[in-house]
Structures are given as C-alpha cells and as structure tokens.
Image (tube, helix red, strand yellow):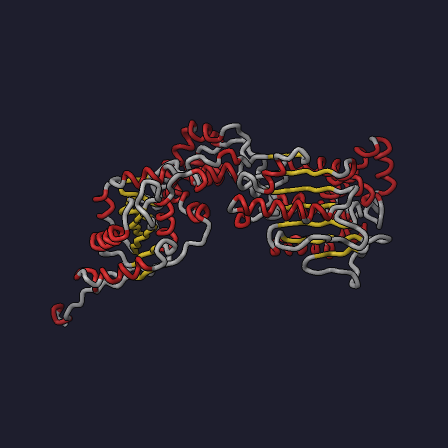
Length: 559
C-alpha cells in the first residue's frame, strides 16, 4: 500500500478532496484517510467515481503521465475534454457527442481507453462497446485495457480482483467481476456483425466509435453511405433505450463520411479541434520568410544531398521566430511544416480537420528543367508507364505516357511526359517511338483495363520488326490498376511538391494537366499524374541497370 502513496498521488488526491468538498471539509477528509487513501472502496475509489479527471490522473498515471521516455505532458485541451466527458456521462443521458481531432492527438490512449475503463469499473454502464475500423485495432484496445486491469496496482487495490476466470476474458471482450455487479467491455470492428448485441439483460450503454472508419472503406460516396448505414442501422440500434451515451472520436476523411455526417447532424453535439492554432495556415507559411527559406533549401535536394540537414540547422538557428501555436506540445513545428510543404491539402484535412480544402489544387510547386540538363545525368533505372484511352474523341480521356528515370540519390526525372488523344495504331506508334528515343527503358507498365492486353501483344509484334528494338530485353507490366486512384496519386504529391520528381520543361501540356489536379472528384483529366504515379510506384521494383562492362586483354597491360 505504501508504494501507492506517492507524493504525486497524495497531492492530486488532496486537491480533488478540496475541490469536491470545500477547503475545510476536504482537508479534514484527506487527513482522516491519508495513510490508507487507496483501500478497497476507500477515499480514492470514491473520488474517482465522481471525477473522471482524478481517475485518469491517479489510477491511470503510468499510462498517461509516464515522462521517463519521450512522452510530452498532456495539453490543456485533453483536460478540458475529460471535464466535458465527465459532465456528459454523469449528468446528461441519451447524448451523442462527436470529437474530431487532428492526427496524433492521442485520442485512443487519453480518451477511449480511460473512458471505457472508468465506465466499466464503476458500472456507470454495465455494457461498454468500442467500435473501431479493423479487428487489429479492436484487439489493441483490449490488450491495453488488460494491462491496466492485470498490472495496475491502484486499480487492484481500490477495486479488488476484478478478473474472474469463469467469465469471458479474451481477445475481443473483458468481463469484470465488480462485486456485487458485473460489467463488460467489448471491442468490435466495422466489419463485425453487431445487430442485437447485448450483455445479458443489458444493451449497449456506452458506445465509443474510435476511428470507426478506415480510409479504404470510404473511397466512394456509396462506400460512405454503406458504412453510415451499418452504424445507424446496426450498433446504434443496439443502445439502451434510456441512459445511453455515444462518443465518436476520429478524423474527417471526405465529405459525407461517418464523422462528417455526425458533425452536420442536429442530433449530435460537435467538437472540432485543429493542430495549428492559426486561422489561415496558408497565409502564414506563404508570408513567413523563414519558412519559405526552409522550403527553398529542401527543394535543392536534387543537387544537395544535405538539404534536409541544412534546413533543420536553419530552423534551429531561427527556432524562436519560427514557432507558431499548436494544440499540444507533442507536435513539432519543423515536422509539421515539412508535412505541409509536401502536401498542404492532406495536411489541412488530417491535421487541421478541415475538409473544405478538398477541391484545392494539390500541386503547389513543380520543378521543371531543360531536357539537355536531364539527359546529361546518369540514371540507375528507367521505366515507361502508359495509361491508354480507348477513344480519341473530344469527350474521351487522354492517353498518357511517362518516361521516368531514377538516380543514385533517389531523385527521379520525368524525362518525357506526353498527353494526347490517339487511336489504337497511333498509340502503339507512340510507345515504339519512345522506346527508340530512350534506349535505357527496361520496363514498360501499361494499364490493362482499356485493351485487356491486346495492346501488349500488338506492341511485341511491332518490336520484332524494328532492328534496334527486336533484341532488346524489356519487362512488361500489364496489370489492372485496382488500387483507389486518389490513394495511388497521393503517393507522388509530396515528391512533386518537394522537387523529388523533376520534369522536362518542354512538356508544357502534360505539366499543365498535372498542376490542375485537385483530387479525382474535382479534376476533369487526371491521366498524366496517374501515369506518373504508376511509374514512380513500379520503378522502385526494378533491379538497377548494370553498365556494360568493357573486356580487356590483360596482355595489353603487360600481364
């Protein structure tokens, strides 16, 4: 027991006593129990039942306040949320609250796990369900809670042994023997069937929707509608008729998704927080000479392998003037700025919880240099990626072609990018002309959906009729591109913005189309940037080209 009476625990307990009972009564109550604060159902147990912040600060101290490593003290906002949740849970029934947070705010560790444990240990709700996107997430929640139940000395001392081997205690559910009652925490995934879920005579009292949607599950409007229907017609129908609480925690990914729907529903109370506490981060970074200097340094990586090191040194030298307000000290200003420079739209969505940015042009900066400067370089690999269109009329997509080469420092060069509306034979001729012009192309990647491989067959036949191509070893990649197109293109947005993919300045039409990209839902033609993304994805899997070796007769050297 004495090892529980740390100075920290005693100080927080005294403060809570005074706040709860007044200065004089609180001090007397604390003094009367100071040597056995953490007895079974003792003073600390009683304070924790009425004060969620106290429960988190004392009972879950090792989980939330262990600063022995790199952990940063919690923010003021975390404490405010605890106060809000305590009021919701103890004073307001049948409520639905949606909290939208920036990525890396620690919502699962600081909110989901403490709230589920608090509700179950005190039987505020005998049946608690945590709904997350994947089974792995659900298992991680259960495992973290098990560690607290099994190893947390404060919980064991104040609540007794709540583990009963005759009750359910597995990878998806924890049944607690809270004498004289029992309670249960169950973690489910969005792929689970939850219709009619119950715990004996209890229906779900507390439902926590923690990142209940995965980006892969909401790639289309229909997918969003299906997920919304699953939640509304499934788990929400399993709630108790009276005294139920729903807490949704997550990040908005797109308009019409689960959390966007909650935010815009009149039956939900909404809370939205942002990472950088500025009204207009675009204007801030645009007008900051210091941050623009760092951005310029980072974009020199093609000629300066120490660009990142130099940018960070510049930041450290000017750190005070480059600070800006953030919601939590755990966010580093330099790291956030790098994210913003790479993809400002994704940053505003993920970190600022702002989906109004969707539809903005994604390419904020694109590097293009003369063809002669590109061709003077040495390349390790070269690929030709092709995204064909089936027709060549005014309403059709463009056929797109990208010759992409890699270098030793992993800066990639789009040596030739072409968009054109071509009939089948002209499309084949274009590929052949590029193969002749760029003899180091060793791999061709052609999207399969359009011609189902007929173009590859025709191409192989034509190659055998051209002397400089007929004996050239070429690897063909002819697959259907099944990955979500936005997700595929998102992988090259940072590389283009930061100058890690450099273009041929002669390819004006292709570059202009790339600059217009604002997401597939907001862009008339995304053929060229999709083609570049395919080339960048596939070139990393090509073995490095080995230069031709010259064989010499050793006698020429006197051997």
